[in-house]
Length: 442
Image 1 (cartoon, rainbow, N blue to C red):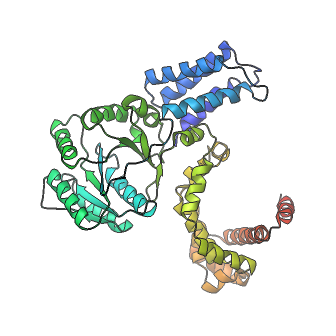
Image 2: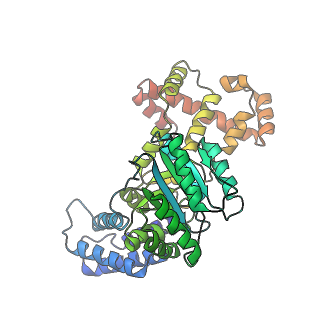
Image 3: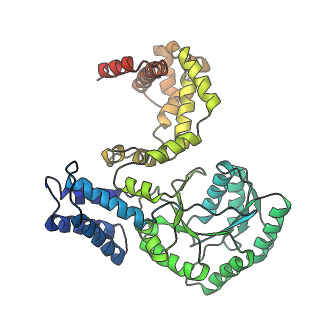
């Protein structure tokens, strides 16, 4: 997410390295590099120019504090301006009415159907709502089936009328169904359409006028950059939508859509999609995204994801096992599954301050744990609960069964033993012992 932009901004700040103060010359050179970085990220030229002019004016209008280096001050100014450029603060979705109707609109292939499922799952699990998904894409082959598959996966009912080819009628009937069956959220998934297709644009305008949604969300594929921003403006002129959803931010996106869209349509980015899983949805926070773009991480979002998966009862059970030295590979496997639920690994690493920048050139695969899982799953139940049972002959069998080597088995056993010791020391409050042990491992 924004790797290229982050790297180029980092290079821009290096211009000030070693300078004792900000001057017109070094600021001009730095802002020139920042503008180049924004343009390479597919940000509109006018927006990029206005952005760097504001940064320059603020930089020259401030005295450098004695405790700060010029680069640090300029980084703060750029962070504040990036935050404002992307909307300033988060804008919550309007679901105050019962039932609340949410209309999803966007281009073909933008990820509307998948995101409709993610949003339903988010409102079900995080907001304790009872959503209804509505299949109004009557044109794309298998679109209705796709939404049913998504709904079944997350445990949400899907309303469809396969024989009905009138999306306005389907949406109206769905609202009646929702009221009769206690649904308090209605998410209407519409067909993707091109802005140049007048007939299709008239159709979604009719749907909008008929069902009067509380929220109309425009779904944007963030990998399409400035084209998506221009299309958003056309859609907004017709629908006057309430907010933007950016999908596929886990891909190799340049970031132009995220940085430009608020300035062009004056509508907030409300959600972002960060992966393929149904849980891969985040409320958009401009300040947190600015931190991540500048390599400062996003600890708050990291903690929030961890808290969403925290099970107090399971934590107590795990604590008791650690205290009795009963922590086994089954427990280790459970912890791995929990980490994987938090999102794709590269996204998680980018949330940890300093780590994302340090590992920018490291290819972090989502299947990073795959070989560990294969090794554990090749063990017998007895071996998982009592790793000390694993002797040379068992190691050979485990290696063969998982497609790994005996060295891989030995490495896993060593890592597991070290982690078990650390967990026990941390649980017992033995922080000093833990520090001593870690120093001894260097």
